[in-house]
Each structure stands twice: as structure tokens, then as C-alpha cells.
Image (tube, rainbow, N blue to C red; front, side, top):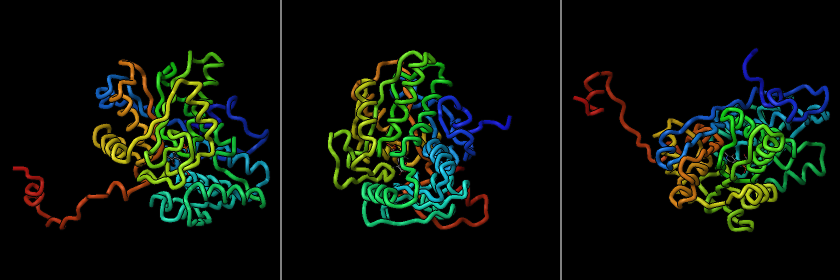
Length: 351
Ligand code: F0G
């Protein structure tokens, strides 16, 4: 009665939590599946955007974090830890704050977007900047969990995947069918693993017929799944997916193989052009990593891989406000105008 209740309460038979657990939720999920008319026209398909930036902390991570923090609290844990390129840490910090748990985050120094850092600070996380990349941070977080009384809330914790799979349920529920193709950015590879699990569950239980082909897109400088081997020094402007050795490699590879899907690399130039197109033509402001799914959609279209008229969903994973620095790059500082309507008209070149 109070609106969307969060993903655990929305799918109680499909997302398991310990009996009697107090559910820690910020009413995540229930995000828009937005038709994208411009992209549809460009590609000759019906494109929908699953807009995950409208989640409580601005990314899809909240779907898994409600489950992870609910489990951590129920098990009597007092502290949680994660490694992150920024969004997992923002989400962990918020849900831990809500639950009254201590939250420690390990992030690659200088490589996380400003908005994400602001969130971790605001929610009172213990922020440890590491002189290494995300892969180094994850290794450190795993070692810390193994030796100390803290719960790891990265997607190597399987309950995170259970929460994140609900996005696939929502898409099928809204479309009344399964999409033909699903495009996702791939970093640590938990999300593509989760979507594939969700689509398979719905198909196995007869709620929809069939499953989509899963198309995963990585930044060209951080594309281990495309190359078939880890990347030692991943680099991309899309810092959220600057990952060289994905923890959910096997799950992602299974999603590709079982769905008849593929992995492709998209250059930073293509990511930025999709980023600008989404904002300027669809009215949807996402962070750069999120635009990798749409860059991949456009690449797939150019290369003739999309059947005309097919239904394609692109997940846009995080909000544009996460990374104001990228948005403002190249914007010029101008002198303020006098308080004068003629000056406004002149500045806008109106006559
Ligand atoms: N898009 C965004 C905005 C992300 O933050 C991430 C992952 C991905 C896509 C890729 O998802 O890792 O499941 O393949 N961010 C992680 C983090 C690594 O620490 O926030 P994935």
C-alpha cells in the first residue's frame, strides 16, 4: 500500500533471506523500463532502457546490497567490507548505515568518481584508498574477511546475485515476454551472471517462453572476457568497469555460452559518444560505464547482428550524477551576465 516495497518483498518466493530476518531495504528496484525511440530508430529494433540509476544510491548495486546486508545483520555480523570501483561502496555504505553496521570500503586511489566518494563519506564508511587497482582491492578484501570477523559484501557473496537477478524478473513482468537480446556493461561480471540466473528461473518456471541472448560489453582497455584472459593493467574512462580479472568469470562465460550471446569490446570514444547520445537524445543521464551497453548496441547494429524488429533491452547501470567530472569536461566557464533581459536575448542569439 505504501508503493514499491523493495526487491525482497516484491519477489519473496524468489529471493531467500533467513527466517525471521529483519529486512534492510531502501525500497530499491521497481526501476523504469523506458522505451528509447531514438535508439530504436537508429537500430531498426525496439530498444528499452532499464534505468538503474534511479535506485536509492543511484546504481543497480542496491538490488544485491539489500540482500547482503539483511543476511549480514541476521547472522550477527557487526561489520561489512567490500572492494569497489565506487558504486558497490556507495551502496554498502548506505545499507550498512541503515542497519547500524560498520562499513569498510577498499577503493583504488584516485580512480573512483567524485559522486561515489561523496556517498561513502556521507554515509560514514571507513574509506581506505589503496595504491592499486580494483583487482588488488578485491584480493585484500577477501583476505581480510578470511582472517577477521567481517562480512564480505562483494558479488562473490552469492546472495548479492540473488538480489540482482530481480531486474530480469521486472523486465519480463513489464514486457510480458522475454527480450530477444539483453545488453550489459561487464566489469566484475556479477551482474550479467545475475540477469542470466533471473531469466533462466522465469523460463524454467514457465512464466515466459525462452531466454534472451546475453550481449556483454567491456571497455577496450579492460576487456578480459573478450580476450579470454585477465588484463594486468586495465584502463578506461569508464572507471566503474576498470576491472582486469572479473570474479564472476565463470558465471559470465556460462551466460554467454548458454544464451548464444557474446562479449565485445567498445572503445572509450564509443562509450563517450553513447554517453552523450543518451543524455542529448533520450533524456537519460548515465555514468560512462553504463553507456557501454548502448555503445555495444550501436556496434552490434553496425555489424549487422540485430534482427530487424527484435526487442532489445540495454541496462544503464548507474546515474550520470555519479561522475560530474566527465559531464563537465570541455564545458567552458563564462562570465556572468548582468541582470538584464536584453543581455539574455543577446547571449542566446535571439532577436
Ligand atoms: N556499471 C556500473 C555503473 C558499475 O558500477 C559496475 C560495477 C558495472 C556496470 C559492471 O557490473 O561488475 O557486475 O560486471 N561496479 C563494481 C563496483 C565493480 O565496485 O561498484 P559487474
